[in-house]
Image (cartoon, helix red, strand yellow):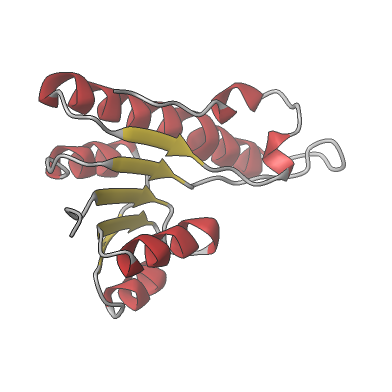
Length: 152
């Protein structure tokens, strides 16, 4: 029997992230999902083999507190948070632009920097993966965050 992997999924309360959480849990892995919607987090807590934590990663204070709490070595970190507004078809409001920057760039960078430090200090073999919406893969001014990484 294989040893269960520890999977952390940022944005695992809906969409691709939730599908991955359910799949990994079904495979017998230890899954923790992070989401900002308390109702979705509560619904996740009712599923078998998945732990859920409510955190709005756009908020630096909440994000920093969460990252301090997540001290368990992980096998895989999946960042499936993202917000896409079709800025080529509509003018973005200041709030929409702020959300895109916070989720798709600043929070992404902070989470992956934390994960990289964990891997360096714990000397474990782990993977970091970013899943973005199909639309977000098209060239736009925030496209640099779409690079996926693997650290060993």
